[in-house]
Image (cartoon, rainbow, N blue to C red; front, top):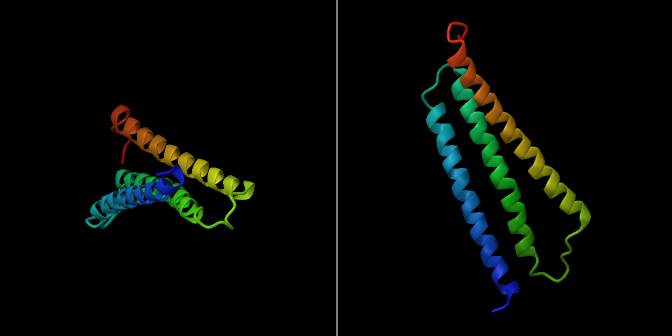
Amino acid sequence: MSDERQLPGSAVGWLACGGLSLLANAWGILSIGAKQKKWKPLEFLLCTLSATHMLNVAVPIATYSVVQLRRQHPDFEWNEGLCKVFVSTFYTLTLATCFSVTSLSYHRMWMVCWPVNYR
């Protein structure tokens, strides 16, 4: 079996992993958000982290899977514009995830170092 025949199977596997990650993060958001009447900063930051992680996983894996599945058609061509969109989307979402982790870390540091000033 050649590599060209194995790529679509790999793309379907990556798509399944992305779906599983989406499901796990959505479950986390729903479990935190279901019991909240008034959002506290910690719950908000955890839900933001889950949402950015969902997007960071879903968008590039879905794009990769679609590209690999479309490769079967002879008229498909991977061009530079599509590559730039893929890379810039991935970098932007990774930056958003890093910002969420940094905000969560800062929130935790504030609670530990200055508990009197914490609301």
